[in-house]
View 1 (cartoon, helix red, strand yellow):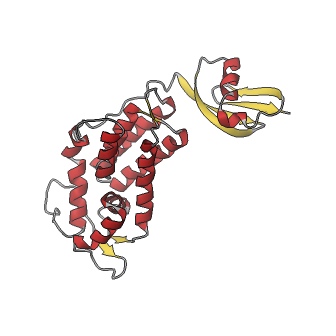
View 2 (spheres, helix red, strand yellow):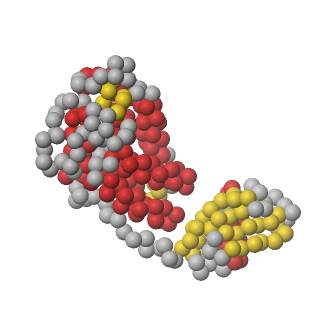
Length: 264
């Protein structure tokens, strides 16, 4: 998988077209699966005409329809097309676009995401190549959940995220790629991202921050961080500050795991 265009975009296009009865790829020996069919939710009959989707594309957008069809379930199984499912697909795309629209891409590293980022690349690649597209999408959604929670994403991760998503939602990813990531060439001409072992996994750990025994935040710290430095880091986290309105009575630290600030 050196380039998106070599497999993923063509693959997902052919699957959608085959499921709609427009092309037949079942006789192609290079394919390891025989696609299932898509049923009309009203008639429970096979959808044979791409025109059936036109009204949905006009209302929700081609990316939303594409996303929903590929996420419905295993592509070699029969699926029922429910219009309600398009709402979730549209919300997914809108939230993705809004994140980049808010200029939340940063130049500094986001170490909090490094391990999950590399794991996501590896798992998405494996599932694309084995035609488990719905599972690949779910892996990307898990990564995005953490991105939204953190509220930022570094440039390298953002660029490769667009590559992972492009086979599923090509239009919005190309727009983000050009408009917000300032990339000149098409995503289709870029190299597929590669999985790397987490270089900082042993150097850093996730510190859970509690106030009076309740978790109020998390952050990534160096294993060499002293107890005093750890406390200062914890005290300066926005959400933690909200609960430090009293006098700090004592600080309990579980090495390389958590810090509990007890406030009177």
